[in-house]
Image (cartoon, rainbow, N blue to C red; front, top):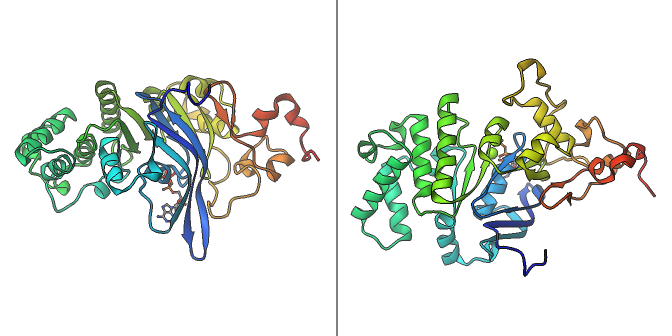
Length: 338
Ligand SMILES: Nc1ncnc2c1ncn2[C@@H]1O[C@H](COP(=O)(O)OP(=O)(O)OP(=O)(O)O)[C@@H](O)[C@H]1O
Ligand SMILES: [Mg+2]
């Protein structure tokens, strides 16, 4: 498709890289990440701990620490996010894209009540008085199914259970009607029943409010239920992206295959679980070539020497793997072609 014909995506990320200064050198935490999120669609970001999922999500909101350097582009509804001035950025955060953080207490301020925090976020973006904003805060708490919502408006974050705190954070994220919601493991701190309720709630809200959503989870069962597409991250790179059904039934990257074998899915029994050998890599000391090669049972010489490109297979399935790229001739590639 040519640029002119292409529909405007909710989010379009191209060759995004994020580096952090550690000591005297930059360490690349996110490397050459590209993906598109269609309006109204839901994408699940999968990957082991430390693969760069949270840094990627925060980058979409332009939340970088002072020691960060960023390359590439992020477009939201066609606008260049990395070029926003302060006023546009303030307008963008919360209204265009909002985030549910991995740790509720990083988003909720312990010294203000839940009601005050939500009302403050609304007043900060819209010209309405505090009384009106408080009414909206109440209706948001009701919408995210906080029981006795009126009483909870005056509660401080520490007075709520983990599940209610998570719901309060969702209400805060929804306070300015965002077009895209980023949910960074919205359920890790919660027990299994509450996890399912929260994810179901997010799925319902997405449909009802016609938002797009990117969420991080370690749970593939959850991903299947809530996502349209899956993006698999490893060592700061995307290794595979595609529609859920395709990724689940025909994964092209050996890491995705490994994740599927090692994660509980509705059809797996405990005996069938097969963990990926080895440990996640140290992002500051990645091997040359394919970052997954040291743990990959298919790896050939070429995989250890050069890094595969992130290539499209079909319209919306992209993979970073020589085995996928070379198909049948991959088995003979123990030497790098000269
Ligand atoms: N502000 C920072 N300064 C320096 N390094 C950082 C910073 N934030 C994150 N990192 C590093 O970036 C890497 C990726 O971290 P990130 O939090 O994105 O991982 P993750 O995929 O979200 O993992 P998890 O599943 O455990 O949440 C880690 O090695 C982490 O130590
Ligand atoms: Mg994280």
